[in-house]
Image (cartoon, rainbow, N blue to C red; front, side, top):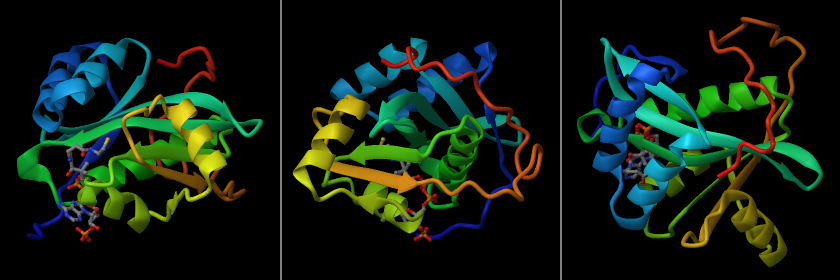
Length: 182
Ligand SMILES: CC(C)(COP(=O)(O)OP(=O)(O)OC[C@H]1O[C@@H](n2cnc3c(N)ncnc32)[C@H](O)[C@@H]1OP(=O)(O)O)[C@@H](O)C(=O)NCCC(=O)NCCS
């Protein structure tokens, strides 16, 4: 079912947001995914989607070297059930891509399970390629620590000269820290 779009703000999570982020993780995931999404908060960077002062979605990411270039890895992503199908995850991903570009990343990568139709449609809609080559899949699985997943996405990020500082996002470039991986 489709809903009206929300007026959203996407921003970096602050320390005071982390309890709400943990609640969002518990709402979106169960089992091992819930465990790792919570556990690895200490290693990942987090973007949050805020609507009217309420956090309605999150995206955990980190950087990794892939094929000799810097890549932004979308680790876990979730939206509160009552706010789904309003473009929240899309906005989180597009903002993460902008953050990755500003950090100098050439790729954005992600993974999911083949049973997760929502996630597969979401990444396809945003222009991600689904990896088919076993060697590419193996590299992406390693880069994403996604040993339970069987669908791997990558997107080559375009670096447009017209996207100068402050062009479309209030989020500043993160420090590049290849060691900040889970
Ligand atoms: C997957 C998830 C993050 C999508 O969040 P969302 O905010 O509802 O996504 P969006 O509104 O941006 O959807 C964008 C597109 O994704 C696809 N999509 C999203 N939810 C879908 C669903 N339930 N069924 C089919 N396609 C879906 C659609 O193509 C949609 O575009 P449309 O609404 O124009 O048809 C959300 O369902 C969720 O939190 N799921 C649980 C956690 C999870 O699986 N995370 C992803 C793996 S880490």
